[in-house]
Image (cartoon, rainbow, N blue to C red; front, side, top):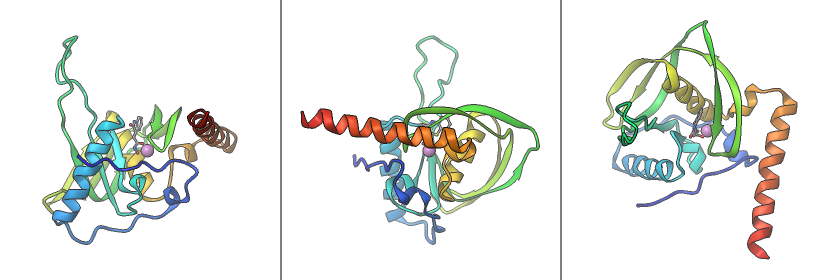
Length: 182
Ligand code: GNR
Ligand code: NI
């Protein structure tokens, strides 16, 4: 298992435009495996390649939702891989969700986005795919596609809230580094 380092704000890498994947080959499938391991370890429900410093249009999602309503139901792994995803339809209806981001640790805020989206993408076998998504899958897919365009969930908030969140992350990291030295 090979875990990758997750880049955090305000690293300018997160602002890069990710470039299309040209070839779905074993090297790419190796990267996908490492991204999934990194996402499960974090833990998170999605990860864009740019978050591990690879500015390519590639993202993974696993909502890790329990398969049944049972109290002790185990989350079954159900990884989804999206290569060169394009959102081709957004509903006018919007929905708000309390979002977080592995690149903005421990900070959450309500973000409003289209409720339903349709997307096209290529899967890990190089097959063209198309699908319609609602609920958390829709939220997560839009959050990840934003990453590919250098956009973070905090960009959907007021400048005041955004700046406050980035300051908090920077301070928390500084405090943690200080504690490690003492
Ligand atoms: O783990 C994550 N949880 C999450 C919660 C609400 C909305 C979006 C997300 S995605 C996030 C992982 C991440 O940062 N992906 O880019
Ligand atoms: Ni994120």
